[in-house]
Length: 187
Image (tube, rainbow, N blue to C red):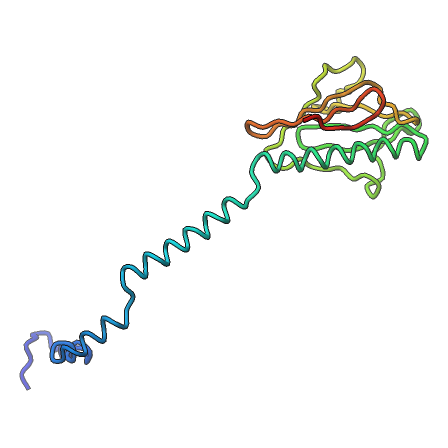
């Protein structure tokens, strides 16, 4: 028993399919037919690319997310106005960089409104909000850093007309609260 290896390790025999390939040309053709062709792989990659492109296009962009934030905010501000009329007490809307919320006037102070009625809401990531008009004296407390507030009295009229500007990326949207308490989004 002669070995070609000096370290005492027996060489492994060739895999049976390699031996058959070299001896049988028809078997070689069968092995190639069992794999994928370059064209088939390219078609699969093209289909995957189309599906990935459709998914990316279906994701909401900056304008869709901004529009959703603006619609939700306008509807909730109108609900706060209605709550002021129904409960016969002033209801405030505060706006902060992180979101917005609602307070009710009680014992000469603003207290958070019942969370079931109108819970606080965060802006979607990337949305920035500001009130267009300059703040009126006495409407910002030092404890309310970064918050701006306006309110509706018990008849549904705001303390002043307000325009809230929401921005996201290069897009912006406006929510206007008129002197009559109407809430709208001008186009």
